[in-house]
Image (cartoon, rainbow, N blue to C red; front, side, top):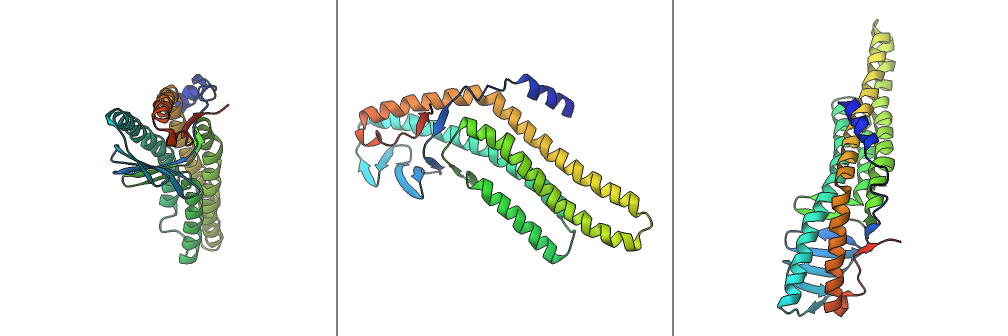
Length: 252
């Protein structure tokens, strides 16, 4: 299966996402009843129930045609943003859960606290860009290219390093104890190193699957963003207050 995954990674064109410059200029919060466009913790645009629009806190009165266009725009965001966020979050959770399962029940309480703090720090670092909590989703300002870079260039090495540091530390502590008590230490020590490498391999394999999923959907994602951009432009033409809040854009 892993050999097949490697072949698939080679078959996908490297430029699949590189050819798409679509991006979100504002952070997006998607909830059951509202959509928020945010930047530096401030909300600039709010859509309630897909039909009610506020721009910088000011309610915008809409006619039927405006409301229909706003609904189309909102529903597009509601379908697209959670899918992007879930793809990234699943990748993070996959790696962290693998590490946590390896650490379960090992080490002293102080070591467990140290490792959990390190895992939380890594989680916070990446979840500042992607958040999924129940029915709420947050996507930080970024392009599809940056999402691809996150999965392939940032997330994998960070999680692999975390795995080596935490699980490697566990086996290091156990190794010292085993030297004193276990005549089969050399065999057990080798098994420990193999466990760390297997964990790293499993994390890489899972993230490669997410990379393939992203590549497979890249053309669709790019097209969806272009369609959202077109709807947004139509809204801006009808509602001048929206013209300065270009959420979906194409980077040069």
